Image (spheres, rainbow, N blue to C red):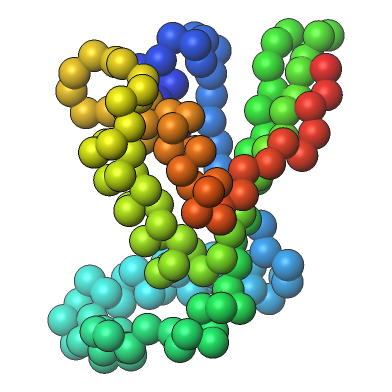
Length: 156
């Protein structure tokens, strides 16, 4: 997000970005914030790293039934303008299992857009983010593949 903003002047010089994790249960939030640093620390040492890696062997991902029940939703909140005339836009991106199914769609549709879409945004060279390199054509492809992009509210 920040790289896209730095490379595209449409974001403006005052652009800032932050992200947060929201869970439905306090216990999960506590487990996440307490457990993740412990897991990352354990992964730094050989014996505990082997123990962590032994938890799941390669190819032992979730079952098709579990993936069918999985969902993701990312909410974006954008505030623009001075406080007296602030405009707030809230959007979301959502879909099915983010670990396997939707990631495969995102990668596949990105490759197809690069290969076949002749109306991609034209930018300078170098490394570009997907937003700058693929833009609206990628969003259109992802929507056709079942990933939802929604405007939840537009106030201002």
